[in-house]
Length: 212
Image 1 (cartoon, rainbow, N blue to C red):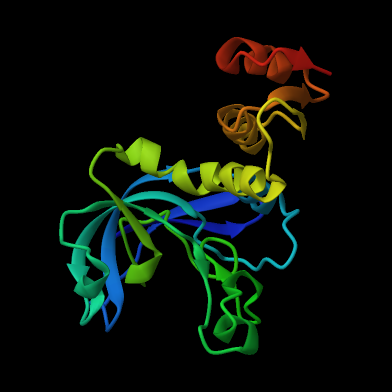
Image 2: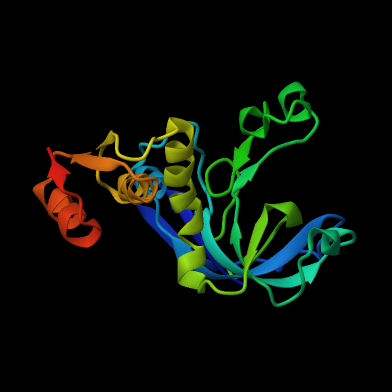
């Protein structure tokens, strides 16, 4: 299958790699239809990404189609043909923090496309419980779910009260998602950024009334 590999800083190679083995218990084989490009990927391309090794297959913002399911994976409610977003944070499930339900603090945490190979290839095997199915979103929209989830999580943690002011520092893609969810929560949003073009976009596309 065709695979795009970041072989070293500044250099991608399009190569043929072996097809994945059939999915094992709890796994799903998916076809990658869309891949988002994150700031993490840009840093890796420039050789500025810490805790990173080469060669690496990038890609953690994914819109995928389920091709096959391993044993028990159907218990997640998935079926062949489902369109899904991918939660790219892989935890071990066995360490002390995983057993406490704090999987984001897993001592063996791996992120697709960063610590382990990601989705810039035709097919990839992932844990079935890391797939988020949608019957309405397009593959392009599904590839944005991981990024949008960061903004939604930030606003949830902030516990915004309708009518209060909320300052979002940075109006890049994740900042814009945070702005949008803060607006949905009823905040009077202030966007702060060094780039005039980003502030213009926040005003025009999201109707942000206050910019710094």
